[in-house]
Image (cartoon, rainbow, N blue to C red; front, top):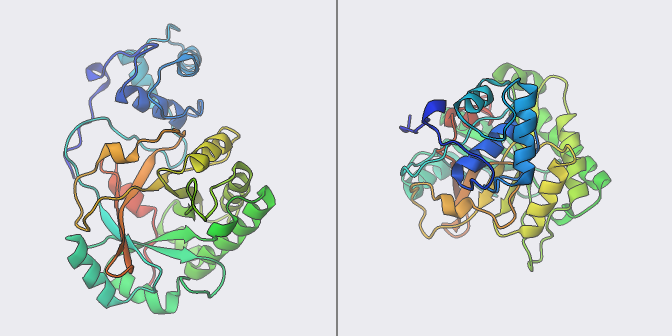
Length: 334
């Protein structure tokens, strides 16, 4: 849908130790997707990446030389991937992703029209909070299902309790269980199972260094993600994270948790522009000082529009299949 360049193995660069580029990030991500590592997506073809390349080549019966040539690229492409993984392609094309909104307020038809005017495109997803209660911000399906369904807009579920994300593993497990149950009860497990093979749920981490809201702790995320994964035998819920791109503490904690087998299926990163209209993706906005073994699915590119009512985001247009990300959000029943 967007003329994304996807070079075949023969057309990709040959990589070896000290080959540090965006293709090294692609390699690290591909190894992670094949169940190796996990490696931070830092673009550094150092000893850690070399060890995983050698292990992959050994396991696949390839020449073990640490050199990623066409034969190794082909084997990586053909290898079975972890559930939910898809490639993010290198490239310098000017591409724009699928746009959407999120609000604290309950969604009304008039808000959908207003958001489309402000954003310059019809929103195709809408972030809403699932808190396990009826407090302000909670998604209320009796009010919101119909306008969203009628507009063909999918719900991006947000697990919100930002004051506790620096807590213990038990804290994370309790909130993960409660918020996953809220999503499952709101839409009904059988309905969700009939709609797709898995759905994202994003943990809301609002803090960054020096700010009043706390950053994420490794133990909290391990408990939260495990509880989300185990919440249903009928529906796969895919734990993911919303964070500020400047929050080094959260990024380091998340990396450590993933390396201890916590699942993270993608990041939704807040890095702001200065206008509400959706514009081409800026890779520089989603580069981190503390890389993690998890790719960016979405960027929230502006917040608090129209008196604080709307935040706007877009799906990463360099992903192999943008529509697949959209399909793993929830189209509410009418």
